[in-house]
Length: 348
Image 1: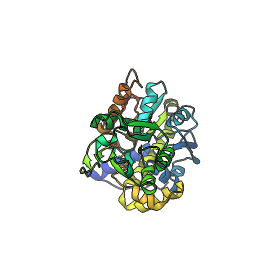
Image 2: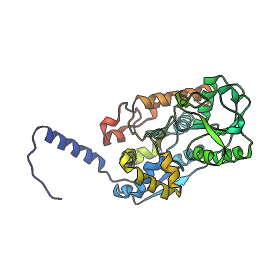
Image 3: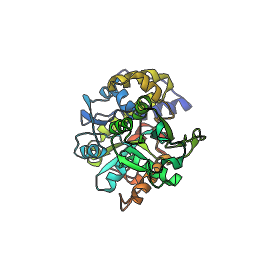
Image 4: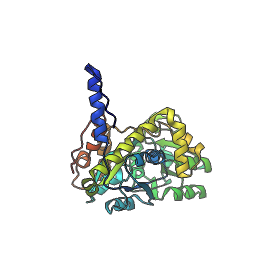
């Protein structure tokens, strides 16, 4: 290493010391060299893919990064506890439910805030133009997911009694819409895009706005969904450097994805990795859908609380705990203290 001797004064010296401190915290050697991520097909996984494709995980000391897709969130959660995967990035509902049902998970940070990402899409021939038109209709969705929470809030908001949710995975819901077996679906991208481009359909509501006739995007917040980084407590305790290195790369990648000047590169790399249409992802990668902000603040606390309210009211969790009790923010704080507005209470 070349030693550079230079005299700094005042604020320049303070800045240099600050940069040095952050760099020393970020320079860690992971205990686990081969890591596995639980993945999905949608754009919340853009930071993971950017980190892989640009070689940043290799730079951080990892020899390989592999990915696994799961047909159900419960299976992904079980794989996490069994250490078949090391990081899981679901919407916030499944990990809240799993923690309260005895699965030792910990939230490391927020991936993307997407309260408007899930949408209600209906066939135009179903005659749905106002809330009351949904009485007696059927929509396909994962009932135990954040889509189920959106359905419950939607019915409560508009006083709808007889709208039925049919438990279907997104591809099955899309097929059922095409066949005319259901009137619509509550789903996330890229399935909304696929529905709108393969079925004569329209969006009537998102998690934060109404598109019923005459509403034209009127703000109506129904969703508290956000995607979060989740690990098993045992893995975090046993591998602190690995966890820090993973978070170092993911936060770097989040910042890269959030920069508008990098948009074309992000779309290209993501689409190549996922073997998806670049035109589709160019349309979907929009701040209105995805906000890649790693900051942990009151928004996180409020969204976790609102989602826990839904689970508690439905009897799916008992002995409710505050979200911060299973949130670990030290790795994020080591990267940039300004990102941690509220500190997690969980410690290894």
